[in-house]
Length: 201
Image (cartoon, rainbow, N blue to C red):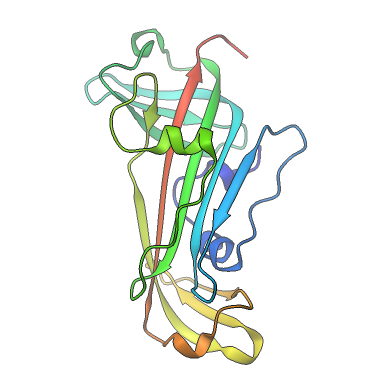
């Protein structure tokens, strides 16, 4: 399993994924369902995917009901088990279990409205707001990057992230970069949900 689909800390490449609308390559053995949606001419969009992956329980905090899971590439996510999560007391650090993962990534210019929802039925069911028995959920992670350069003739822009790093990205051909200004903010939001199969994979 590659790092890209399982990470929760959004790296610069995530912005390129949504502005360029190219998802991470799937490995042949992945059971993956991906959907993305965007408005013609508007930068950004929504990317939703669901897949299955074996994970190891790396940490458990009974007081906060937080569970940290690690994939085979050593990427990790921390999730919160709701009060009705069945099997929380059975989990032990070191357990290897199968996880059905749903992830959502939303990228948009702050000056524009939120992009339309993308839909894969399995993922959206897990990600929807409200309590669900048997579902672990992560907090929503938000990063804000600033547009520092625009090259309309190449359909490229440069984003600067909070840690000072910059990344040149290719923008979709339908986006008119003359409508985007240096200094505008790109908002990147990610959240995840997981269902664990407590039978060992």
